[in-house]
Length: 458
Image: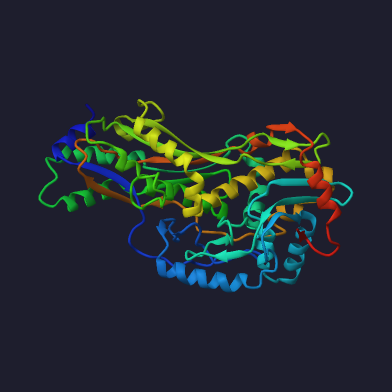
């Protein structure tokens, strides 16, 4: 029996260590780059302070943010109505960005949100016009109560040029390790908690005080980001999605989807080893990308997110042995529900759709790089790739999340923490292709209908 198990049996209660922001509020601090910045630091319902602590955004701050963003998008020309396949000229978009950069003017919402695109379903290479055309469904922009910029009819978050630029700049560096983020307890904190629990003789007359002491002993959870700059909006989306997944799983907030309860609520009363730790993470899935024989027309489809789980083994000294514990059937069941109802969850909580958007943009960047589509088209993407020519906003770097311990009557079952994160390898999807002429007609129509003086069209 592990030291944790013995200690908790003496306590006579189940103790769950949860990831949650402290009660303090924080403002949505400004984040400005060269013409960028749309509502400051707040991303996905969270904000990160100057010390890297993740916090839930205060409702009053969210309301102020929503009002500011509604005023900002009032001038957005693109997307006055829904379009099943809007086309965006990457060459002309680049020219518009450079004009704003030279004049010192902020980028208009049309550029910031890539002409109102909800997602990219097609890429068309135009060697004669020295262009790459990005295409997909688009719509007018609206702002929800949390300040998220959404498509009016589908409710999906619109794509962000800022995230696309981060993907282009980072794509070479993710060949080996992919894109990832994780929120985990520190080995030192777990070791200290083990020692503290062995010293306890019971939960005491003031259980809340004992639980707060456990929080202090375990300390904050550590946030790590890889593949993209930790001070980018792209990274904030990864962290916000991971953070929200953990809050849902641990029962700190409802999913909004009836078929997706918390992982905690699914665990029956009964004994389990305190030496095991469930770990949850999200991975991307895609069908093979469709291309024509000349590799000038591409179609991306079959995108999705899958929740994965395995149980880690807690060893002496606070070390964690990944995937060494027996499989957790309840964790697998919860992950299955998360996967099956991910699209509905993304409609209820847009941060999960923003995660899919970021994956999409990384896959597009990998496809352009892997197939050298910019060279095929004769377009120079250096102004977007070169940070010296176009600076992006820098956000506070996520570092820690506070720990909260909660006593729950589940027999002798308990969990130290739910670790995990988000991970995907865009290069994997960029190299999985299948040949078909299905996208050729769309490419011909896109080139024939391109206006002479606009960078997006329907």
